[in-house]
Image (cartoon, rainbow, N blue to C red; front, side):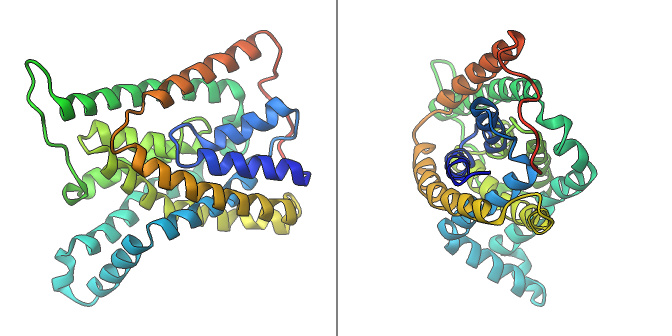
Length: 290
């Protein structure tokens, strides 16, 4: 991988990680469209450490408060009723599905799941799901002629059952094209949570999964499957761009609809099907690098 390729891929990772359009899918597509080698699942997982570092900094106050309360709850029973302490447990509970499936489906993640036809399918299907979830949320927020405005759930309402459902939604993002934020936010909206609550828990929930996945894939660098220099460079680029994107996105969702992302996902999925169907692009374009 050249330094230019790592710069572009790091830029793509940072731009797409927090948007509901799939960063892993876009890394795969960028390489395929440019005629480069598939950067591979290992490169994707490691560069996600950069964007996750942006989450750690952006939500640093929330994270410090949650970690502190959770640690104190281990020895202080009274603290176990504290919302921040409970959030610590809920992040752990919500991380179980992706941990189990990530290990179980490792070979598929690095192989069949990277087929461009599957990515196109997940882009379209999850785009439609996100669109439906967004419309339901908008209907509750603005009401209508024959509908009253309905209060939506916040993180104060989050329990173990909903935490596990969020976790299952996150695990779906093991398939490129699904989108971690897209799947978890869609799940949250369908369960009746506000956009802000669904997005905030989505980003907090991603921290253990992404850091664990990135640490696990570091062996691919040490074994020579991924180059240290370009990978670290891409990770740094992803961090800087990712921080700017998350700050913008958290403001965007408080007043705006997800429909632009829905339309983009569907159009991109259709484009991929057209390119593959006309033999302009091979569904297996590029050789996996990791």
